[in-house]
Image (tube, rainbow, N blue to C red; front, side, top):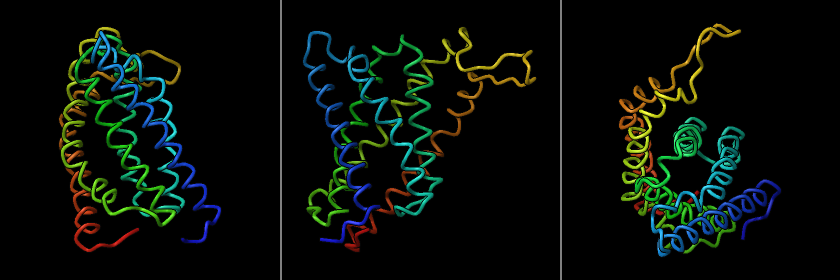
Length: 219
């Protein structure tokens, strides 16, 4: 077992905490799905936990920037900001979307991916990662990532009328700073480039999979 430095101990604790949080979110998803309300209340029942641990995951940008982990801070920022935009600025603010099937699918996909990813990180840091977990870590994203991306885009499209009518997250003129921002128009533009941004991240993950599973290398 590798020497547990302060940095390694911190990262192991962080990833264990994230794994526990997302495992609880997945438990909430499953128990809610089999309740009388089904998928319609998945987001309502899980959003507090999901928002907490998604916000906490901003630390991963700092981890990459500080060199605590391998990986690009830009890639970490893109992944975090993409999720956070959909979660905090769209899904949580537009309550009419909470009962949309895409909201339930999104939370399921995120929880399923994270209950594999974070335990893999934690066990790798402790040099006790089983081969089957590595395989899951670098295989499960293949179906889950496209499904999650489609769910995010569906929610953005469904939110557009509310963003326009309620001017959510927009900054209207005139104001003291003489600065305006139309969030509705921003999301329209984002929807146009979203598949290209997603493809970049997806190709990055596929490259990592090839390196891990075919070469047998370990971070």
